[in-house]
Image 1: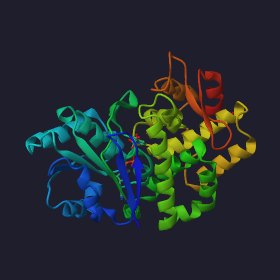
Image 2: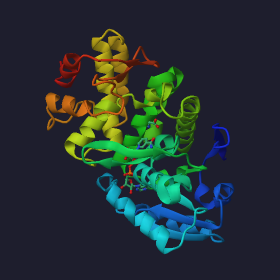
Image 3: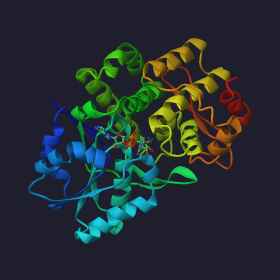
Length: 358
Ligand code: NAD
Ligand code: GLY
């Protein structure tokens, strides 16, 4: 069964195809290709598993391939140069299409390369991690890290199609799988209480990777994300909700060095820290906080910040965040279960107290 959602953005609207075995259904990508030329961007891990099938399905198109080193620590401007060099060496024109085959790191870098190459070419997303299937492949945020901050260099550039083959999750390591669950839980927390309750009832099935539970979790997540992006493509309002837990999470990732904790692990912990802050501010009941912590633990995610980072260091890192305004910390915080608010000028003393475990 294939489920196709639509992300409505006028003439830049695009389909999100979700189903088992879709890697062999490359005809679904055809309408997104501007010419019979494509550059698949991947890494050795994912290419070893899935490149051949994707290439076979695109056999009548000139498909060149560039492989980038695997890992968050390579999500940098320096690595991108390899993509531009390959495009130029193989004489790709303004009509080429970049195909991101991999997780969020490959997706974010490929999208950014597409935004820059010859001032902008088409790209499509073929996400192969749970995190990329439920979050990063949808919505057009692309970019790379800078040593001083996560995702600080980038562009909004929407893909022309997203092809989600749920079968690819079969080879995903356990830790990566749990990382994706963090972003799924996030959708429940920011605006979909029935989905949060469904996740509570289905967490064991999800961790056992039961296909129907997974398909539903992915489709509901993409539907939630598409609705929010359609309402606020450039994050001038509600899209900021998607950053719930991310201010804490990005501080963990940057503080430990990109790639030490997985992005989803840092976000999972960040969601719990945001919930603890909301609890201190009286916006969340003890019972609601307990439900959030329990679900995160059942998903196999950390709920305490890394001991290597002091509360003061975390706070210092949180001051470098794209959401902050005029030097004041701005956070997305739960307001009850299934709702969030944008909290302006959050007290640093309160944040320190939460980070210190008070
Ligand atoms: P990742 O891309 O590093 O992938 C995780 C690991 O799994 C890698 O080693 C990869 O090679 C491997 N892998 C991928 N698919 C596999 C498969 N099917 N089987 C076996 N191994 C596989 O990490 P990720 O969690 O997918 O993405 C994290 C990145 O996404 C971060 O850089 C984060 O900033 C970004 N992100 C972006 C957005 C956005 O809106 N653009 C949203 C959330 C996260
Ligand atoms: N992952 C946050 C966003 O897409 O806005």
